[in-house]
Amino acid sequence: MKKNVLNAAGVSNIILAGIIICLVSYLAGCKKGEGSLPGVSAESTVPLNKIKQLDLQLVASNFVSPIGVVPIPDNTGRLVVIDQVGKLYIIDAAGTTLATPFLDVTSRMVTLNPNFDERGLLGVAFHPNYSTNGRLFVYYNAPPRAGGPTPTTTWNNLARFSEFRVSASNPNLVDMSSERVFLEIDDPQSNHNGGTLIFGTDGYLYISIGDGGRANDTGPGHVEDWYLVNAGGNGQDIEQNLWGSILRLDMDSGLPYGIPADNPLVGKPGFDEIYAYGFRNPYRMSFDMQGGNKLYVGDAGQVLYEEVSVVVKGGNYGWNVKEGTHCFNAASPLTTFPECPGADNFGNPLIDPVIEMLNAQNPAPGVKTLTVIGGHVYRGNIPTLNGKYVFGSFSRSFAAPQGEIFVAQPAGPGLWPFSELSFASYTDHLGQFVKGFGQDLGGEIYVATSTSVGPSGTSGKIYKIVLAE
Image (cartoon, rainbow, N blue to C red):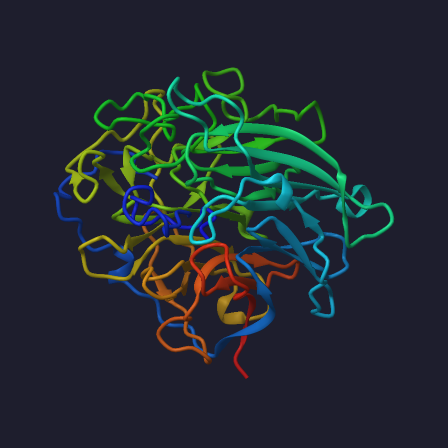
């Protein structure tokens, strides 16, 4: 889904508008010598050895458009599947998918396009003390409010962030009357919604949201920023709206929420909610369960480069000054500028990604994808995967479902090499669109797939990465 899953070659709303899914920093100095024909990425020239003897074990099926798997932190062994169409489903400790949805916000959402849509139910996070307080938080796209970004345009939808509580009488049902909306943002376009909610070890809620949609970070609802070479955009703006950012909120103090005192923009220009910015479509992000609990974010590119970044507090990840490690040219997105600024107007360096993949429209040779799908650092019981970052490709193309799963070894500065994971039951690719990942409390990783580009059908499946038999 790319539920905002996919960036369709960056022109999701122009070319392939009905079927493109966009999901899902930048250099401290000017990037020189890239010219109009982008070169081969470092990852594609320095592959890792393929990790063998793995397979995908089917865990659950018959979902419409599953985009993620989240564990319920109450020691019951239950998992929740996020189905983009507006429902959460429980997989119990025995591996049974409960027929009645745990939560259903279908009637509260904007109507989805079954052929392609990046909107829907995009994320869920359980409070760290869920076992005692029953609190959970969701992000979904509601019908738009009246008005629009300009006098002649209307909003596309309303990004809604709500708190719910579990039923007092049934631990497998959410009390739907308990909804408390804590944040709403008028959304100018249907794509680039981000979508992940996750609690950090600091107890704060992190939320990823995209640049508001469209290509180039331009159009109604996209403000002017400091970089006048490229028109737009919300990614580089921190003072007029929250789009293109990762937010960090204290859900245990204040109404509708509190601001952590050490958020980077507290007492400075910009919204206090912002933790990091400069993103296009940070569709999926995760914290490493170990390794310093680093925050990994998969950010969908436009037409040349896809990226994964390690995010730090106050970081600027470059969009739309840069796409990946390259200087973005909004007037001609299939080319790059020979150089661009290495810092923003506040002096913050533009931080480069740690993983860069070629977008399917990139003319350079190498591993290509329609969009990168952010994953997790593996912390389970497979020794050869331990400590490695597992992520995905939505598909090689829209013509057929050709999703792939990749692995990278976290390293130091610069781009990390990566390679494709091989699975005993599959050759070449999975034959499915990879729409999201999940990780249980034991560190095992799950993959959410379907054979439909959009939120339609019942081909959605959840797999677990396991050792091959």
